[in-house]
Image 1: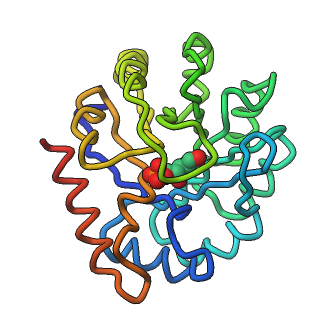
Image 2: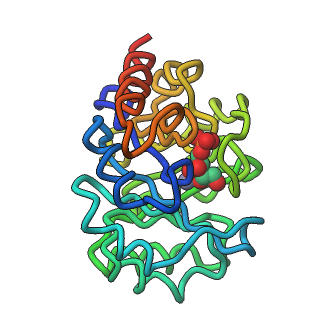
Length: 227
Ligand code: DX5
Ligand code: ZN
């Protein structure tokens, strides 16, 4: 089960200084991040806009770990090649982003990338057994996507537990995105999560020129996972 795997901490640069992304990525990795989570928003699938593949390509040399790209984009199929070329390691698309999710996941894998499937809070998981052999990561959205700093939606923990059972011993990461803090980390890991995305909880109090608080935040979240 995924609960036995080491937990990866994936800071979301949505909470970083947008004018200093390269330095922010280096700082958060130096302070102990396992992955860097990159939120791409299109102003259509979600009511906010961040940036596109050119920014991801620009960030790539500043990320030594895993560039975990979360596409909140619809329709998304026309952008898979660009994000693959930008150097994403994981490309996550939403179950809700189009009628042909199976094809989209195939397209990601055909580029040699890890394929992630994100599921909004209001969406069920009936489709997951039909897609499970196509995915390397399932991302449970524990807020409605579009903004950082929102309140964690508690009832999604049942979904995490159900997905963990479906994943079983498959090598599929179970990622949580939205409102993750020291207060819910242990419950999430106990339910089977092995990748915790967090923006505001990890970037609070620090900056690229004062990165020590990032390290303290990461250590606190890691410790909270253990209870
Ligand atoms: C929400 C994004 C999240 C978000 C997490 O649409 O996908 O990655 O930045 O931020 P916090 O941890 O502040 O909820
Ligand atoms: Zn995200």
